[in-house]
Image (cartoon, rainbow, N blue to C red; front, side, top):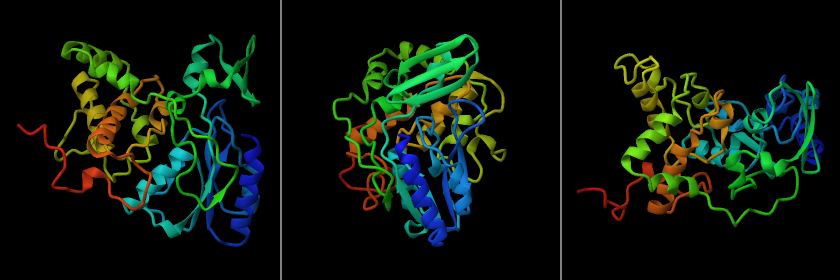
Length: 315
């Protein structure tokens, strides 16, 4: 993935020098390991700080909604699908953006790596499919494939679905993955088992809203949890309020989520919040033959009506 960096810089430099765009949204090295930061480059000199590796898991489409400039954006597969959704939902116009497509082979999961060691990790170095982890008394090399984000292990859209320039050759897509094994396991549970599963899942939630803030789909001017007239959900750590937040946020993403993993990556306590949106993704695929963000030519199933829409749930 390091070979992409020079090409990303080359394209970005050219776009800025030719005034094709007003700014480029990319990544720079973060202040802590495994957390590269979004970076807004407005001059060719700003591009020098750009980086690209397996720590670029933040979804940069999160920074596009309602912007007025002409923007270049570095985009992996899931980012590009969210860009499609933003265009469909009129949050930005297609002719406003120049998409620098980056084929992706997966991002590493910092939660997995941090859980492997009792000491603070000081440096993570990536090379040739290996991850070298260094810290106080720690110097260990592991296979990258063993510490990928879970959404990356089942991703079937590693290449950008729309792009104007490519930073590298397209990669082979995964075809032998079971995307919904974990969802089916929960579907097969009894009602009591499901209740206990979700009680345990959300038991560590601190209501920091990092999942919402990292999500490129959560762009409402005022989130329902912040409304006071009427107040839809309480501000306490009451389990009912926590469940209400997570379930309603998931429903707001139904038919829109691209499973980019930004929510789980941002969660400071490691809650697997994707299980909710994965269930709704599976339902949209089975009921409406719909995967979000793959085309600009069709409207999502939940903002259209067809006489032949499934209605077996109506009794």
